[in-house]
Amino acid sequence: MLQLSTHPSGRHFLQIPGPTNVPDRILRAIDHPTIDHRGPEFGALGRSVLAGMRKIFRTEGHVVIYPASGTGAWEAALVNTLSSGDLVLMAETGHFATLWKKMAERLGIRVEFLPGDWRRAVDPKDIEAHLRKDARHEIKAVCVVHNETATGVTSDIKAVRDAIDRAGHPALLMVDTISSLGSIDYRHDEWGVDVTVAGSQKGLMLPPGLSFNAVSSKALAASEKNTLPRSFWDWQAMITSNETGYFPYTPSTNLLYGLHEALEMLFAEGLETVFARHKRHAEATRRAVRAWGLEILCSDPERYSPSLTAVMMPEGHGADAFRKVVLEHFNMSLGQGLSKVKDKVFRIGHLGDINDLTVCGTLAGVEMGLELAHVPHQKGGVQAAMAYLAEQSEVRSRPLQE
Ligand code: PLP
Image (cartoon, rainbow, N blue to C red; front, side, top):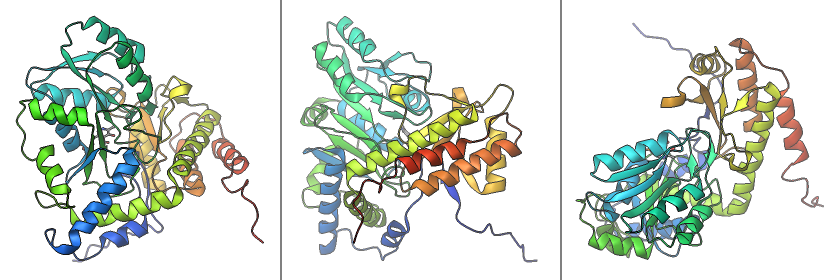
């Protein structure tokens, strides 16, 4: 017998902090015949996306693109630069920093893990103090997450770089930008980052499946000396093939068509405008949260994330039951709380291809969900966000067209 399923009208609101909504333009770009990745056409595509990604990372150095999720690019950063038994310094900003640490340990790397309460950013003073104590330069790398997707806290990477320099320490600096690249200002070269890790499914507005390393010459030199085994993740093979726009193994051809389109969209909007848009939408979201009388997980207003906001549930109310109500009633996915903050917070993603009305729709879904799930709150969150967005309208200051 035919199973009739209901069809929810309208578009699903994917307001998790990645994967994000994939714009129609990008979906259409992906929807093309796959070409020969060793044929004449492919090289131009490869060269173009590699050059575009260099602009996104703000680097003149090498960018490597893997057919893998972000976790693969984490592994690539570690296995290309380190040897078994090496010591690295990491900071417990939240779930993703903890996962990266666990991965390092599984690879035979020793980790000094600076403890954190999952509400604050990396403390550059703490990094400096630890590096100063390491007079024998045993620490080979400092690895930090730029934007902790589990908590909505953004760390100051320039300040971390300055801390390393003040300590006069030669450690490499490796940074995870999986939920910041293409949404939050980031400068690989200027901030002296050695390896930047990124993924396709957040600020780059693509489906999951591509990940990236931006590599400094210092990191490349380290990769020639270290002894951790690697094959699939090997930078050297990639960089050699990439010189002509090709890859040492089969790339994700169709995702690269999508990446080409995503880069055109980001450059047409202008990176500065993209970053300002994310900041505005984050501020509108926070105004709504405050109006509801709920608490933001990030405890330092200087370090609020422009790409997502994690909201704490009032005592006695589960975030997962609330998210279920929102999904069932409004066809909207909100991010769940991960590990230590499971069921204690929900996360509103405001990154990628969104505009003022997407934000208003999202916040309306949250406000109605709070009501339906009987979560104590005050009304007026959406109103507060609307007032801010109208007052700070992006086009207000533009001259009127004749
Ligand atoms: N790092 C951060 C900051 C993330 O947000 C994620 C995923 O959300 C990862 C790493 C892991 O990436 P992936 O799930 O694409 O393997």
